[in-house]
Image (tube, rainbow, N blue to C red; front, side, top):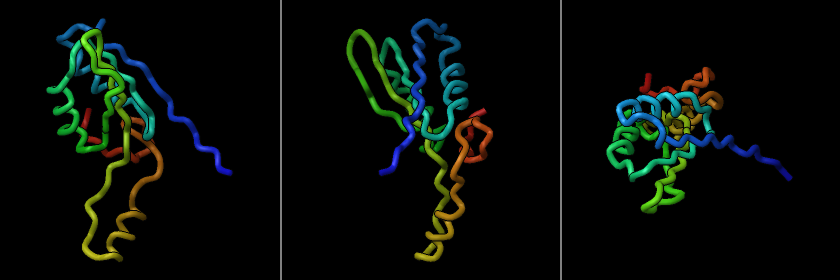
Length: 119
């Protein structure tokens, strides 16, 4: 029987953050997470432009899942995943690419596994 570690879940309610500073605060929070951590984001509206910016800025490393999408609040879980290198052609290339994927570290975690574009 194997025991898997439960990821850390960090709640971030941006409703109290000035609208002028929200995106910068959100990017900073995302970049402080380790691979596998979850940021439970709470907002007063569905942040579709932000989701687009995150997808573009982090190239698929930050994934999201809606927990709640109602008139009172929107709750989204963001998770950090390792950057996947482009696989070289052929089966042997795929094995080499898989071996090159860092196994530790996260967005800003100092472990070297993230490679995100954020700063």
